[in-house]
Structure formats: structure tokens, C-alpha cells
Image (cartoon, rainbow, N blue to C red; front, side, top):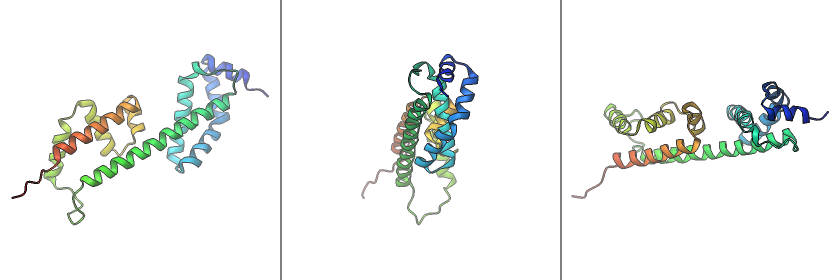
Amino acid sequence: MTDAPLAERFRAGDESALREAYENWSSLVYTLALRSLGDVTDAEDVTQRVFVSAWTGRGSYDPSSALPAWLVGITRHRIADMHEARAKVRRLQEELAALAPPAEESSDPDPADRLLIAGEIAKLEPEAQRVIRLAFYDDLTHAQIAERLELPLGTVKSHIRRSLARLKSSLEVTYVPR
């Protein structure tokens, strides 16, 4: 059986073709993502993103190529995006750990410190505030923030990078020897 009729319907925007494509190849996409990422939640997220990307980008699909092969190509890109997001989160966590107080201090933040940080976050642009709060208080990944706020992933990453730099410079204590 050939997938050409399904591929043509998919490219034409037939929603039943999207459902059929998902039924036929979501397990393949999920398996590839799970093997690469090793995390069920991330694999599910990648699977969803692949089919959303395929559907929204269906105009660029060339029906002369196999639909499953095109989906696998999108899957590779979404897996790479997830690995990149993980690396960014690790870098951010390392930056935050470097800003954290020494280990001998209490692990519970001082209420005054919380107010200070909340005040500095409040000085950020409204969009940057939302991004930082979702990243650190709700513990969302860059991709999850982009989806929730309907922003491009690069915009979310830029907001986080600039906001961290601003918070770091605002909260740094300059040592002045006596």
C-alpha cells in the first residue's frame, strides 16, 4: 500500500489525514525521541511538537518524498531542539548555582532575599518577568515557556539570558577592601 493519497490529503490540509498520519507514525516518532532523550515526558513532548510542526509546515512538504521520512526529519530537528534546551537549562542552573550562597548558609532563602529578588524581577520588562517566573518558579523548560506564552523559542532564550545578566549585575555585591 502506498501512502501517496494520504500524503496528498495531508498536504492539502485534510484534518483526517493528520489523524491518520498520527495513528500510523506517532509510535515511530515517540520511539526515536525516547531512545535519544531517555525521558518519557520529553519524548511525548517531542512527538506532539513533530506533528504540530508537520501540520503547520505542511505547505513545505514535497509529496514526491515519503511522508514518514519527512516526519522522521522533523523528529530529528525536534530532538536536537530538546537536547539544546536541556543544555541551556544546565547552563542556567550552573549560573544560578554560582550565584547561590555558600553551602554553610541555610538552604531556605531569607525572606529579605526573596523580597530583594522579587523586586529586581519586578523591574524587568513585563514579558521578561513572565518568562523568568515560568522558568524559575514553575520550573518550565524554554520550549514549554515558548509554547505557553506563544513566543518564539529564541525570544524566550534571549529574555532569560538578558534577565539573568541584569539580575546578576543588580544583585552582585562589590567587595571593597578596608
